[in-house]
Structures are given as structure tokens and as C-alpha cells.
Length: 134
Image (tube, rainbow, N blue to C red):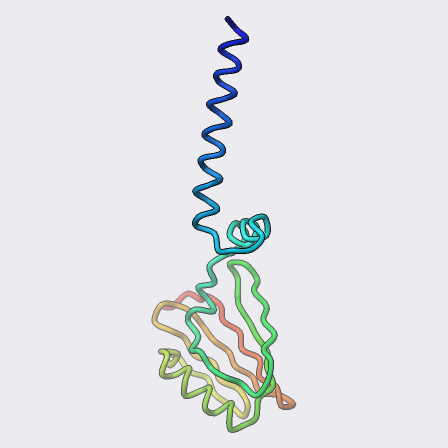
């Protein structure tokens, strides 16, 4: 009797596990399911990056995300492109408590995100972090 009950429980477990994996595979895009699952489980929403305007710089962007602390990127950028990006930042709402200088801009969103953009040696570095607004 114990063997029958054990086999029945094992069968139920196997069927329920198979049902879950079929559901998961249907939702996953085509490709390697194992690598897709890893991407889904490790992806962290980047609310810092999402506050920045989409923008095309003069070359490839190098990104860095310190989970929960800040998001930053660096890209080749001319002075003209830098000025256009500053206008895009202001349009995106980064205009509270601004600090400006040659090749430098910093401002805050009403939601408490602070951006700093620095242009040096033909490269822009942009960093976003959360700050307390008083």
C-alpha cells in the first residue's frame, strides 16, 4: 500500500512539473530555454536608466549598473551632440536644482533622480542616482 501511494505521489509530482515547464516554454521566445530562463530570472528593472531620454551618441555606449545605487554610461560625444543631449535631459524633466559649467550639467527630476553629465576628451559620462529632495 505504501509503495502504491508513493508511486501515485511521484506520478502526480511529475505531471505537475511537466505542466509547469510546458507553460513556461510557451511564454518564452524561441531559442535555448535554459539561457532564456537565466535572463528572465536575473534581469533587474533599471528604473534609473528608464528616466533618461533615448538618444543617439557619436559611437558605442558602455553601460554600468550598480544594482539599486546608480546607472551610468559613457560614449563618444562631440560638444554639439553634448548640447543636444542636455536639451533632451531638460525636456525629460531634469531641470530642478541645475548646476552647469563647461562640459558639465547636473539636475534633478521631481521624483528624486539626479543626473550628472560630464564631457571630457570627446567622451560623455552620464550618471543617474536617487537623491533626497528637500
